[in-house]
Image 1 (spheres, rainbow, N blue to C red):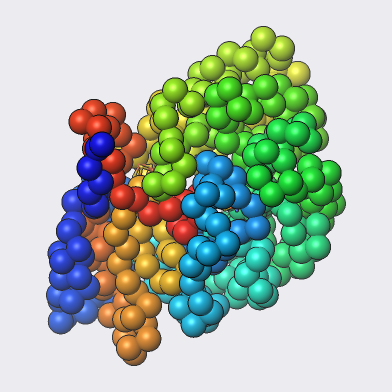
Image 2 (cartoon, protein in one colour):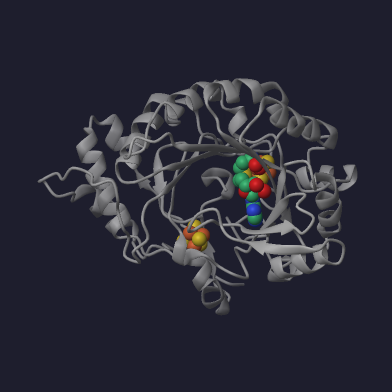
Length: 374
Ligand code: SAM
Ligand code: SF4
Ligand code: SF4
């Protein structure tokens, strides 16, 4: 059996992580509005996970056998309040964050999520522009919430959907949730007028890859943008095997058997999805090649967990605890200097090192996707 050891992808051991927080320079520096890590990557995006709970049990994320009835979730007091999230977000903004994604777990399970959206949508970037505020959801509760989220200032939305056939979709959510309800949620998202509505489909070879073409046929011409995500080795629970990854190249080749398509430019530097458009101008789709064509060199994303830990990589096992600083009375300048210290020492590039790391058969402890958000 291979041994299990904790990995700190950022190259920081637990004690050095604590040291960073403890040894912030006593002369505090005003945030500059831009912050580079050791690989010259700016801090640009913040993903905020608002809950570790979910009503689905997608086997690639929260398999039932591990996230069963007796699984321990965080209590209410352990979660950052909306005021705390908003305050920490302002510290991130001061260092250059312009794009915010709310995620989870299932973010719409967090009570009053529209109030948080409203608080965040009132914040401005360092150059006084509105933030690019978006949210990723499994769509199960969106029918009821779409209008409230739009009214609160949510600009864009991504809905996860792993199949167009009832049988496959129910197997992919593993709680027998009906496809029709998620499709109705997507209609609600279009009806309330979000600037963009995207679909995330995680593709597992031999499990739901037969759903790719039906997905394209269904959404082509609707204004909704499907994105096909390579199945990733996030967390320690999903039993990931490389053989189950269908590469983005294979997805594109498959779509090309039925539709003429051409690649198009990214919307902005560092965009995770590679974009393709239909030659008949009826829309676009994207592929996210997290395994076969990694994009760590452009990764400008920090992640804030529901209990206030900052993670520098989706595959990290070590977060930096800002909640205890916050709750012990730290002022904004102190928090800002802590964040500067954390980001400026960042070295993470797990996906680029994946094959090297896996070669010796060692498994690594990583944070779960449902905890840190996608
Ligand atoms: N519950 C929400 C949802 O499913 O949209 C938000 C959180 S979920 C963790 C965010 C995204 O991560 C989803 O689109 C999901 O499909 C994706 N995801 C989860 N596990 C994954 C894995 N092993 N590989 C690739 N994507 C994954
Ligand atoms: Fe829940 Fe989203 Fe994970 Fe599925 S992918 S189990 S919906 S958090
Ligand atoms: Fe960013 Fe993913 Fe690379 Fe980590 S593995 S640095 S989250 S792109």
